[in-house]
Length: 418
Ligand SMILES: Nc1nc2c(ncn2[C@@H]2O[C@H](COP(=O)(O)OP(=O)(O)OP(=O)(O)O)[C@@H](O)[C@H]2O)c(=O)[nH]1
Ligand SMILES: [Mg+2]
Image (cartoon, rainbow, N blue to C red; front, side, top):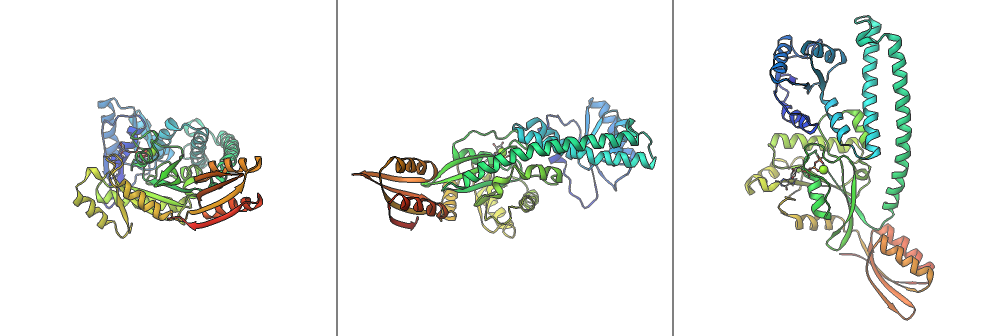
């Protein structure tokens, strides 16, 4: 169900997809163009219509695209006989089913509790104004007690999350100390991020399970035309992502915030209007999570579903929002080598260095460390020396060459790699 004003677009298709991702079957779709009604959100006549539809289809839930106030949800449930939830609650339901890591689960729990807190406040207000004394069985005193209990729970979860975050920060720091550049995939949910990720790193992360298939972050090393690069797949974006969820997922998107380059994926198979809307939402979310300083590259995905002409038309229509776009198809392996070349150009600040070092227990363990943390191209052993050629990002090269000198080695050549 969506109530909207005449100039507002319909979001019912996406709402239906969200409902399916939450495991429901959509049996009826209802739209109303009207101003909000404080009692039900929609007009009384529409409530009657929905009540009949609920009976006819034996429906178990009504899902609203609009935000529902507690009192509206209560009144709707009383009239129709089934529960009425809003878009935010539906998204929370999907996340609850699909969260797999402890961190994701705690984040969802936190978002839920914050939602409850916001609504408890409304209940307190209602009780105090005596509009609805004892609304839903809660008097003002009980609501206060409940409010405090929820706040305590929020506090406990926040502490547990901080602990996990500190651990993750350490992992990320360790990764940042690697000699590789990092690239993150970002974009609207269902844009095709994980499909491209799987193709590039030969992985098998889940794809295509509806909206929000990916809820946690995966990072893998991949070979980019001879350069080793870290690639990250992460949770997708959505329009009107509630602020409590943005907060919750900002930490999941930290890899994106700290990467060297973002690949912003745009599903090209949709209508131009939807493409633009989703692109704007993605750019806005990138801003909100604090990743706007990072260089971008735009990709249009799923181009196998379009003619060459349509692909070009979309590119042209988007040129004010996304200056250069690489059209790809991960399913049909289209333009993937072009993408790799572009990426390689963008990440061309790798440095190629050659050094020679006397062999000892100490330097052998240094060399094995180097094998793990940088891209070693060649090692030659001669007499008591090893000659090593490797590539890495400049900050890492300085660290390595400092250690080479400490072990009485000789730096033979340092050049920008091609
Ligand atoms: N035809 C076609 N379909 C594609 C292509 N890439 C992805 N898809 C399909 O698009 C759907 C969504 O793909 P995913 O890779 O799961 O999308 P995602 O961006 O990771 O989605 P979330 O994790 O839910 O945010 C799947 O059904 C894919 O098979 C493509 O190049 N061509
Ligand atoms: Mg995914």
